[in-house]
Amino acid sequence: MNPIATVVAELALLGWLLVPLSLLLLAAYANWTSNPRKLAHCWTAAKSLFVALMAITGFIGLMLLADGPGFTTGLPDIGAQFGLFPSGLALWMSMLVGFIGWVIIRYADDYLRGDPGRARFFPWFLITLASVLVLVLTNHLLVLVGAWVGVSLSFHHLLTLYPQRAAANAAALQKFIISRVGDVCVLSAVLLLHHHYGTFYLPEMMAADGGAGHSLALQSASVLLAIAALLKCAQLPVHGWLLRVMEAPTPVSALLHAGIINLGGFLWLRLYPVFDGFTPGHGVLLVVGGVTAVVAALVMMTQSSVKHSLAWSTSAQMGFMLFEIGLGAYTLAFLHLLAHSLYKAHSFLASSRTVVASHSLAGYAGVERVQVINGVLAAVVAAVILSAVPALAEGKLVLGTLLVLACTAAALGIPAWVKAPVRASLLLCTLMLLPLYSLLHALLSPALGSTSNLVLPLAAQVAGLAIVAALAAGSLMILLKPQSRISQALHHYCCEGLGLDLPLNRISAALARKTNSLSLRGAKPTNLNKVTPLSSGERS
Image 1 (cartoon, rainbow, N blue to C red):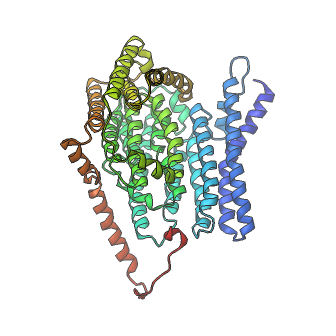
Image 2 (cartoon, helix red, strand yellow):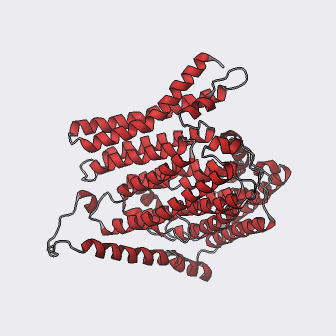
Image 3 (tube, one colour):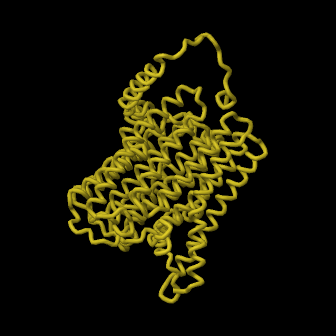
């Protein structure tokens, strides 16, 4: 082991560990001081910390790539001494957190200038991202559980940034209740994993022989982790909280959709190596995630509110991610997580431009004949390519079908008015999705550490194909026959989200009324006719 490289690795990992600690200390100082100049320096320091996080993460990544037989840094062993797990997954996620945190803090610095909620936003924003970093970097499952709970509790304060907003408080209460159920599921699953493996350290679990791979403890833990992921990722039928928290300011919405809601998928990407083969938890993710993806995608296209449309889109995308995890396509799910985080953060921060762009879709009357021909041609060629090179789809029929649908959808989007040479070039670009996915798969698969040859049972394959077929049928009906009676009826019911969130809304409303009645007991009478002026955040 190279002693110089070892010292450099220790310093890099120490810097990695100090970033979340520095964020917490900066949050505490910003909450303590009321000096405007010092607060401005705190915002500048936070931006610098996120840049430093990206730089340190990139440096550790280079060291991890250089680590080999001829040049050993001892990163895994040194990381264990600091309680860190310097794997490829942690590196990619840390870089994502640093970049999104840097973008949102710069946006919020101007967006919340002069807003009364600005002072409360800053410390809780830093605490939330510090908790996410601890969740991503730790190698101890009990610390992971604590960070999981910390993310939810700190983010709750961001959702209630304007305490006077009754709708925001009700939405935050609904999410709070669901999150506590998820916390219990994660803790119970971790205790079951400890019962099976005899350790809380994740590297030791991965290195151990699973023994009875189908033990009751592992099977039960998989179901509990699946439930926790479904709750965190706003899947049916508990998706309603995601729609209601749109009361929060735009930077909070961007943070939720780009860095918080995908933690359910990260939890599975982190823990899947401790399971042996297809588990009941995989089945739950496959079915519930797939159904949510189909329903949410259809409902998304009927929403008139930009934020509600983006929220349904997030629910659908998270459903796809969990569906892919259920299939055992972990690399695709990881790629989905990274891509969704980046584009959804941009979508929320640029939501005003989305409103302007949406006017160009008014009066949509379906695709034309030449577009249908493009789609059919792309589907046939993509199917032939995947049949000849099944490794592009990891040998999975359901995944191959998804890739064919992706090429088809891209080809259907080629405008009918373009000339034939341009159309041919664009059609070729749609087919390039296959080698592009193969390239990204090769880039990201080493980050997941262990390879997975998950064999799907026949029932799971049938369920997966049925879900993909339902998605294809619904999408094609809307694209080809948007004015048909079936499409219009579907649009009518989807506008209200099919009423799937009503049971959860009734339960949370009843709990809210009970909480309010308890809090009002013994309170001093107030003048209900007194009008309280709205804050700048409420007026906006």
